[in-house]
Length: 217
Image (cartoon, rainbow, N blue to C red; front, side, top):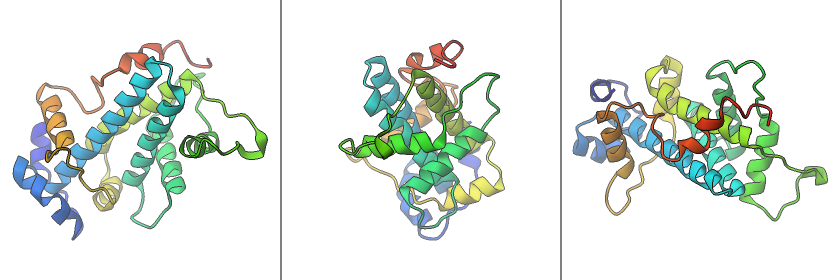
């Protein structure tokens, strides 16, 4: 995986490449590869943090992080337009659903319900639309986090020309933590150890371990 990242020749749009140039120089990886490593690293943190919260029964915060990850995926696979957060979230949820066919009997969460839940996690003082209740099950976490991990892999390994073009133009900028690009460094070390971006995620036992038994819970 690492060698393919170093050899990638996918280009970033003018202006976007300049944003990633310092990271590219530091690690000797083309800007597109740096952008991917960073994005996959962010996805891993969303998934790991949500998994940790699930393991402690903190479901509202875990739902927020899971859906933040879905919105990031939506940004990666959307045309570069001034779409709002809700549309990017819907695009991300649609992409996650289409990554692979669900197992027989698997309950796929409805996008409308997840969009409403995302709105509630961002503004918890709001009442649910029409006074209705919001429902979020452990099976929904398993579905979202499993698909987010799969997306982290496939955005690199299986991306077609259309997805590459959209990802190249996505408005994603690197965040430095204490002067370091921690996501890029961490993911490079992870790949060097022989793993793929969507595997060996901290706290994944809180959702992967139940995937075979929690359908319909």
